[in-house]
Image (tube, rainbow, N blue to C red; front, side, top):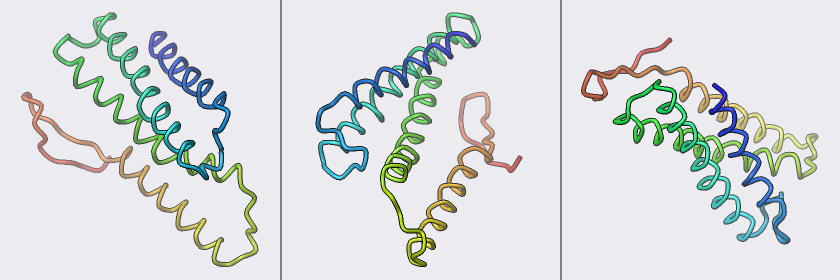
Length: 143
């Protein structure tokens, strides 16, 4: 949907511009200021922009009714915030630091971290939940 595309694009561009134009922001996340800026703009502002535009865009085009806006907004915000919490620090530090992969200890750590991220992603995206008409959780099932 066009509105979701605009919301997701703005949600990425605005916080990224603000974060990377901070004078003391370190992509290595080696100081508390950088971590705080990433949490503030990455985990709060970015999902806020995306969730708000997406939820109201779905309502505007009559894809959801007004009573589902808080639920849809919360799901969008939580999904984006968790994705940023898990993946962004790993990617920022990984691409900014040079790692000596000849060390067996670092290689094992990298494999375990990659496996944990892959497993976490599989749990989040492959498990389907069933809800009854009152939006109460019933059970989960595999795809």
